[in-house]
Figure (tube, rainbow, N blue to C red):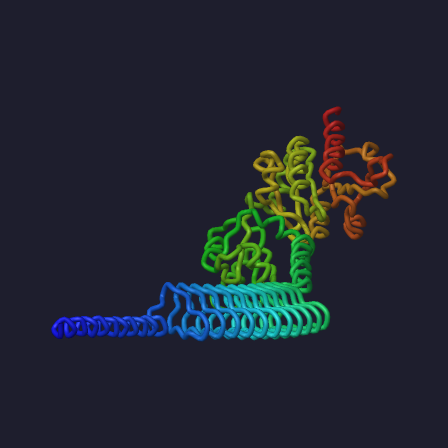
Length: 473
């Protein structure tokens, strides 16, 4: 009986011990589980709530008063502080050192908001692709727009408005009270100050006036040379000197105004000996004729045909009884000269006399306009038309001038004697002194509104009247 009680007591003590031991184990397990829950440093995929602190909550959300040193993919709300919120959004009173792809709102401060927008009272040191509004200050707003009271040191492609100050606005427009030190491609308006405006209306107008002035120079002061630009010429000191020594027929020599020394002295000496006209022109004119090639200050125009001496031409005309010569006074159009040469050849004239000055020389254009007649008609060049007329009179020629004020019509004159027909430029006619030296003046009847004929046409009419009379006898 006693042994049975001891056994029962022992069993009861064993059961109690087991219970207490089990309770101890359960309590330890509960404390361990609580510790694990409260001190879970991993916590990577879970949620942290209440007053928990999580050093890294990468994929979860941080709410309440949490502090997260890195919340890369989540969202930070409330009073959170996030040193780097790269892909999320920062709201409220957040501070973000780098919010590259997000948006910064409210009282945020962003040192670099490259692709976003900066609004409100933000300060952005570099807002390259966004827009800066309000009271912003932008050190470089290259592609955006600067408005309000902004200050931009370089706004290359945008527009600067208001009271802005821009040191370089290359492609944009500067308006209002702006100050621009260099506005290369844009326009400066209002009270702008621009030290260099390369492409503006003023410069365009100056360039246009310069081109028009060059055209007027070509057509007036140097009209003769302008017509010969496409003709044959040689340039360079050695080339011109060899052309002179080779007895090539030269219409004239152009000499640069400020050129001197060297072989130019020899060129001038040979030109005087051969009675070649030398004309001094500006360097710009020389460059216009030869382009970018080096002319060394001298250009010589080559005649399309050799000229003959006046005496030789007179003897040739006298051998053709009765002789016929044509003397031109002031014909400057190469097409008119070519037409006169054709009429001279067709009417049987011995040759044509032209002055060295104020007249078109024998050029390629003249040869083409004559349709081959230049090869069959001799041409003499004289320095003085008046002296040539006196020499013709001495040789037995009657000098007949065509003039609108003539009292006799061209068919009323007897052309059976040797004749030297004088033709002047259309519109102007022959000069006063030339008219006074003529033996006879003849006119052509006019009934239209135009008071003159083309010089080539008038010459042809009179020449064929001379030919008609001579053929009729």
